Image: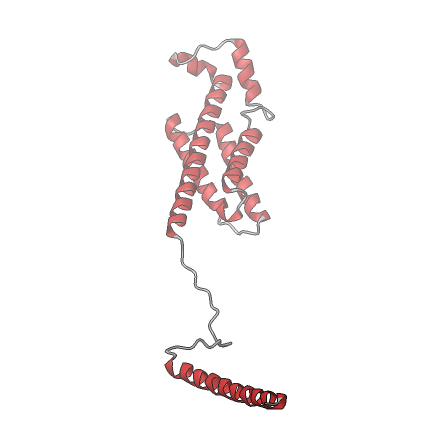
Length: 197
């Protein structure tokens, strides 16, 4: 046997194996196409629109928080204005208070009360109205869309303070009322929001 005989047999086998492999690949590919139930084909026309669903639990939590903060402002306004009215009463209407027997006030207390309600005093119109506006701003985080809600809470608080006081509040409280409403108007104007007032 010659070396050439072995070499030529090997060449024949290689050619046969290559042809057989190519035929099997074609048969397998055809069989796969016939047996496949669904084939994913990428499409550039596929919809990419995102749908949004409201989170009603979060909305409810946020509404409850807003209601609590509005109630908190109303309560603060009521307490501040009643305290302001009491301080005013001590300073300017001391004799009627004494006639009722509600308070006993010495000269030093009366002088301190007059200082507290003075123009630059802690319970004066300027400082009291600014505290109310600062509190409203803090509650809303400065969100201009909440200005009217805070104004409404202030008005409710003022009415409640009058009820607690037993009628109209003293003039200083009325001046504070006007100053707070002017403050809300300025906040709305600065934010570009039109108001009815």
